[in-house]
Amino acid sequence: MAISLGFQKLRTYYRMIKLFFSLTVNYYYDLQRFFRFSATINPCKTKNMLQGRIIAHYHVIEKGLSLKNPRPGFGINVVNNLVSILKRYEENYGLDEVSKVAINVLFSYQKFNLSHDIDNQELYQELIKLQQKSPSSDEYPLEGGTITLTKEDIHKSAFINFQDFVNSRHSIRNFGTGDVDIKIIEKAVSMAIRTPSVCNRQTWKVHVYDNEKIKNQILSHQNGNRGFGEYANKVLVITSDLIYFTNASERNQCFVDGGLFAMSLIYALHSLGIGSCCLNWCVSHQTDKRLRKDAGIQETETVIMMLAVGNLPAKLSVANSARKKVEDILVVNN
Image 1: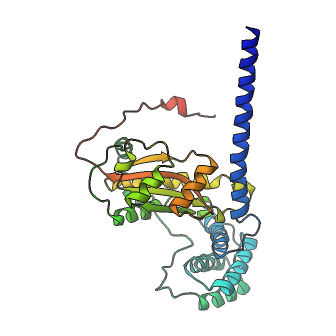
Image 2 (image 1 turned 180 degrees about the vertical axis):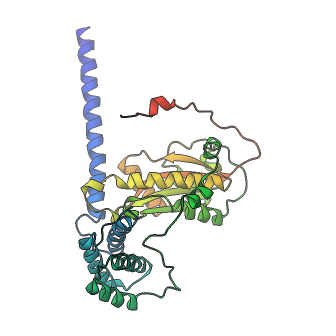
Image 3 (image 1 turned 30 degrees about the vertical axis):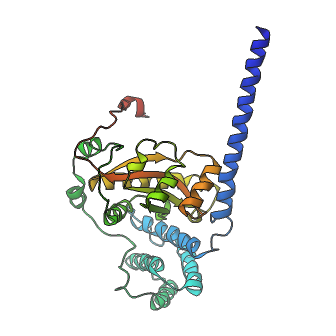
């Protein structure tokens, strides 16, 4: 009996050590990827990193302008930093859509301050110089800053029977035949782009695969699609690009932003009559590397999840999964 208990303890210790080693190796993989590819060390190293800095800065100004009572002259340090980054961006890459939006935001900021008798001529002259070098408004729309809405404007489109909509969405493992037009995928992505993201950085990418050989190769790295994955017309891989994140506090933000976007994309596809099934990406670092190689995914991108996509058949069976009660989820803190 004593020998048996001793053996059980040794086996438990062995499992703990094995688990600890596995966690350490995989966390180190995430650590070195974030350290290597994020903008933490040098936020101005590449064009995309600079774009991330531009978006983060102009969105701070947009948020300030959208407050109920913005303080005149707010955020001048952010404004000056944004102008400096824009000048550096123009010198290295020229001005494009991202920089044009930033300039529009800065003009909105200048206009707001003028309405409160604050005339920052130095800022205005810098904006005029940048505007002269930027693409025409015909090429890029005048986005950025704020727009004025009424409660009725929002309610007009927002009041749908969302409960019926979400209740009608199921994970589909019995796909119909026929091709899902790439135009439908594009439309769904255009809807999902409205998803909130940290500082509006929109770090997402959606990789689409429909070649039968490549699709099955990609699915072979995910162990939750057996028995139905091969019937999906397309496989989507949703990623979030680390280059837009800047410090240790954002080490997990790619998963938050990527997860939000994935859910929006799932609902967008559902609204267009397309079935989908979420395929989680809970794998070792070795499998993650193999997928990147087979799928042609850039090293800077973190894989969030896969999505099997296909048409709906006329009749099908779906899992009637039980859901927790509201009181098991909702915690009201008074």
